[in-house]
Length: 458
Image (tube, rainbow, N blue to C red; front, top):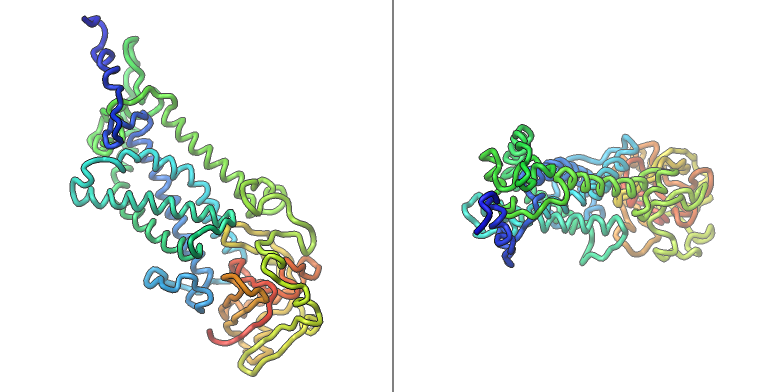
């Protein structure tokens, strides 16, 4: 016979703790952290963060001017998904540095939040029956696409940032199409779940806290720091969303829900501190220990900033860039001219302070460039008012050995065929004998080792 003073729950609990082997049973998932409040907080953070990621991703797509020329368009079969609303501007000069820096850094910072969110809803992936209604079926489908798409997008993004090109194809179409699948699932899921999530947060914020536990009572999840008790939410909306998340037999809590959120936030902060510095110079760059372009600058003067590709790495033979061998071929309406580096130096020289910003999220501060304005080269071949231009490099392989620039980019007086940087001739790794530098353009459009420029409508 049991002690009449001992609560029945304490007598029966050991039997209930024999968790079923199948993850399709709610009792299989015993963490007391799971619940509507924890999931809703993470969901609201992701709602804001992923929306910013999607918008800045579209801006990165626009920065390539994909409507200008097929050479710029890395997603040729995109159809309506590749809508293109405007030509990329040249002001402010730090525009792409900002938008792409936010896109990549925020993507890294959200990784702990995404993983915690997926962990918090994993019981729903195994819930049976698969669909109780049309709305429930749509939610389950969106959840599967959301999980798969999220993991795919964040994984490919991290690999690209780390310069690990191990994709089964080009990063650009994979990430582009994956982003649309992911965001469509995310939007569907948000429409179905965000109203309930916001009600949960509002209700749980105002829910009365339970009375202090007596000597014979077990500590509830709310006492452990969570705002709701396990399994018996105080509000109908909370009860509905708790189904499938709150364990019917939670294990003893080892950390509060607020403590778990602090752990997630700490992980995000650590990723921010160890990666964001690659978008700055000086001591801040040295804090980016988890990014390829972190650490001290590689040199001074003309070599005082980072590079993605070296001359040797892309197969540039020093003999090709010698004063005797190298000629720039410029073609336009009135014909073709061939210019040596000495001939380019005899043309009017102009300077501009411009940064370089790459799709991987790293950037430099303004470097001082000096060379010939692109619009003056256009005028040499019959385009006094400027024109589109196709720029081709000595580099023979790679997706960006050619790039097209719009007329507004060519016409900007700060757009140069640079011959010097920071008061010294270009180094081989920075594009000697000549490279393009354009304000606010992605780094891959600032073509190095320029061999040919063709002006005209593209």
